[in-house]
Length: 462
Image 1 (cartoon, rainbow, N blue to C red):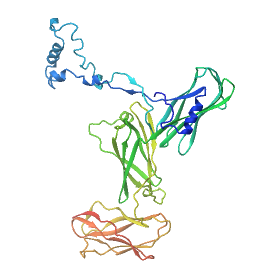
Image 2 (cartoon, helix red, strand yellow; image 1 turned 120 degrees about the vertical axis):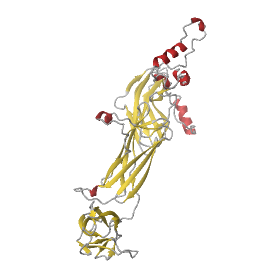
Image 3 (cartoon, helix red, strand yellow; image 1 turned 30 degrees about the vertical axis):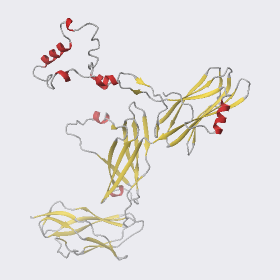
Image 4 (cartoon, rainbow, N blue to C red; image 1 turned 135 degrees about the vertical axis):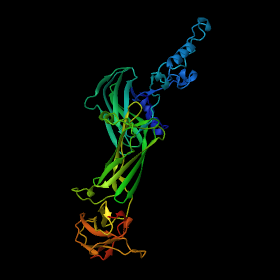
């Protein structure tokens, strides 16, 4: 809980000064304190404590064949048997820098410190304030109607309204207290407006407005990189902590758009890590340290239309958005949702030809089938097409040739639909070879498409 907060942070304008002069004639006044959790305050002197074994004994003294001898030596060193060796009363604090317990190394005395200022308020947090309306006059204030609202650049949010059930009275020297909570969803300047409508000692109806200003900052930033390799899109997200407190990430989930399926890619665990159901449930949160700490996430995205039985979608540049939740050192929660993340703009193709399956074992001079897929990525019917092996640009003879008919005729393809077909081929040489030059031609449009990327195969002898 912070110290009382007394209004705006800027110097008052002439109009505001006149308004403050009017407020001096009021019996009531608002005081606002921010409710926030206390912090742990390390003891600087405790940071100097040490374990005597680290000073007087070698590293393996207590793990050797006779650790009791080292322990006896240390005990005798710290507690001399001869009482005349020390002067009573002069060395009372001789061991004040010794660790009595392993927890002493944390230098935490066990005391919690309340914040002494209003503090920083971050986007995604819950702003909680303790508000007290005090009667500093010698008269009783009656029928008090209290309203409180948050004003931002975009909207006004009503937090409290006692119009239907006014406070019956606030006696002289008394007060009326209440707590307000507000989920912070906007950046920039915020104003907490507290108003009171009441009857003073003379029976006059008075109106008291008070304004408390604060600013909301961004607790973290999310920087993304998008890279597309063939049919797979990779999304890298770097989350940076801009607060003065460590953030423990409870959840960082990427919610893909309807036409995408997302999989998070993680580093392989160490072989010594034991997997269990309890370990998965009690998984430690990811720590992003205060003042610029970062953590990277990597996701693999595939089009959901590639899966069998899935409806076809026209691909959009929107990939999805992140849902992020975290906690601070003492468990204060925070939650953010990013805006939609867009992919890198690429030249769209009306049709796409790709290889789906190639036999794992291929023998020289024996035919094999290459399974291909032709996808119509437009909203209209296209085709027919011819698929053939184009001549080499360098004039060299191709090692992998089409077996049989040199041109394969494909029928019309409906909007956002795909057709799969097989192309019979044969390899003439052994070793690592490339299937290259598979080209498609649109008969009606009289248009040639880019050849299929080279496919490496290994040709074996029978």
